[in-house]
Image (cartoon, rainbow, N blue to C red; front, side):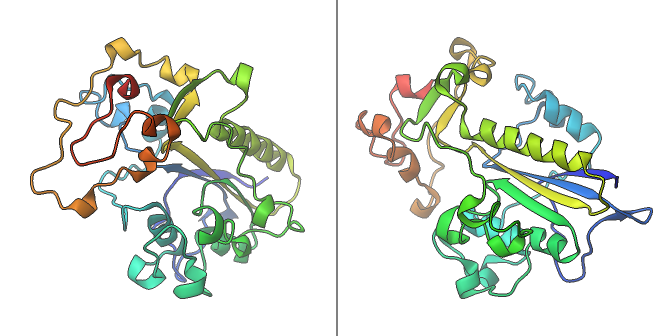
Length: 281
């Protein structure tokens, strides 16, 4: 068995000069985890400011990790930022500024991605959940980046999990009664892969990428997480208004407005318009 290295959404060093990781001559296994829209409100990073947060696993992780606290996205939109990170190039090179265009069609036809680098280096690579942006923006998670198992883990067979709660902006889900949320399915799928790969007797190292969609909306999540933050103990921001002279392009609520339950409230998404209280907490 080769040693295992766990990485949390990192690897800015993805260029032709970078080489897959070695420690004392051994090629390391890699677990790559990505979260969607994760605001780093982690208790261990600032106990005074975030003391009310329940982040025990991330707290433990930060104690044994290189923590970068001045990292910024290349562009504050999902596909452009993911494409920039995974291809190691700026948006003005990838030519991605929206959620539909595939960079392999416009800017990076033959570019190597992070998982692709490991694949080329002889690693077994498999992804699940949201790593690349979904659908046509990546031709279903960039099949050429991953190990080929006769198409069973790539293209439309790439594991995303079943999206059961897509019509509700907010829902406290009892997974035992109504079924798992998508991230829970991805978690279990990843654990299964990791257990099987860890039992392997072969010498081939592996790269496993696991992408979680939360805390991106919709806010339909397992009840046990909502229970950590009782509504009567939750404090909303003191100033809910937009900054003075904020450019209109910096404001968007169209994703929230797309949910039927939000539309039913009459919410139009205007600047400084707020939801009715029952939709806020």
